[in-house]
Image (tube, rainbow, N blue to C red):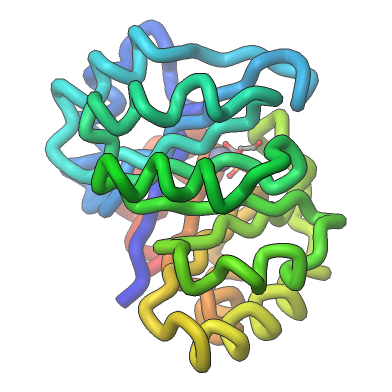
Length: 213
Ligand code: DX5
Ligand code: ZN
């Protein structure tokens, strides 16, 4: 079953609690939080104090996507906050297995995120240890960008390898997801669809979530 994960990046930050309640009521399965540090990506969002408060009011699982150069500084704390899903970027970490182990020791669903130009093969050696892989379908840093179709091939390749090595692996797609590409993404093997502007730039959250599903 496909899970829809609205990205709060495109929501109204002056009314976060209202926005969270609205997407939850509209049928969202997961809340996607984009953490940007101004180094790994040319943008800044928010950090641990905000994540903590969101987790306190969220009624659905919280998914933290770390777009930061030093994700290892935050993994244990995110575990202590009982965050449900955490991903960090392959491009930012020397010791992938070590950092995945930190998340697993805290019972967090552990994921690795891949930029559009990073091959999925780079994580095959540790795929069996992962709960999910986040495939970026835009260059990370901003909401509202155009979907990059080269991800279909990556998803199929990853799903094929996962079928043999980790059949429960979840595949999350992030960036430019809309009602035109959603079904093709799921057909290719994705099961979590992140959507920011497609949901929050509309007035009808429930209609948008419904059309993605
Ligand atoms: C981009 C973020 C995405 C972003 C998606 O760096 O990781 O989660 O919010 O936004 P849309 O759906 O508008 O492309
Ligand atoms: Zn994201």
